[in-house]
Length: 107
Ligand code: 5GP
Ligand code: ZN
Image 1: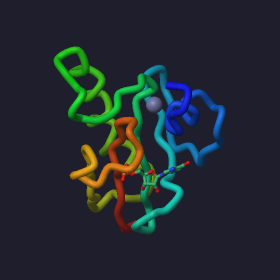
Image 2: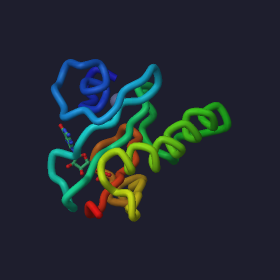
Image 3: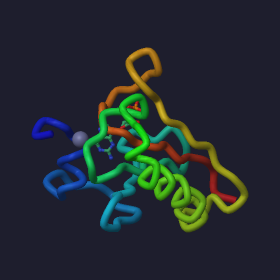
Image 4: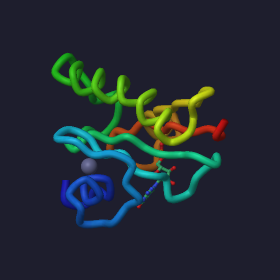
């Protein structure tokens, strides 16, 4: 998606404060954090939202969700954290490339 800001971040065309990267995902700090630690995990594959996910995305979603506690721990959220997936305009989604918010306070 040539006009998708998160695709550009995933491709390295727009800079980000990166937390983690592998073949399938990138994680980076949110530009407008709502907590002392607030990062996003996105697939490199363009998927507009959770509403567009089907059985073909099961492994990718599982990979993202199992990264959440690992990266949260690495970012200092060892005592707990919040997660969020805003979906669709009615769900408050602003960037239409699937992302998981992870946020909280350091222990
Ligand atoms: P949504 O409301 O779609 O779930 O959240 C989108 C999030 O992306 C917002 O928290 C917003 O601050 C963040 N965001 C939007 N544009 C950028 C950007 O260019 N860089 C980073 N790091 N975060 C962004
Ligand atoms: Zn995208």
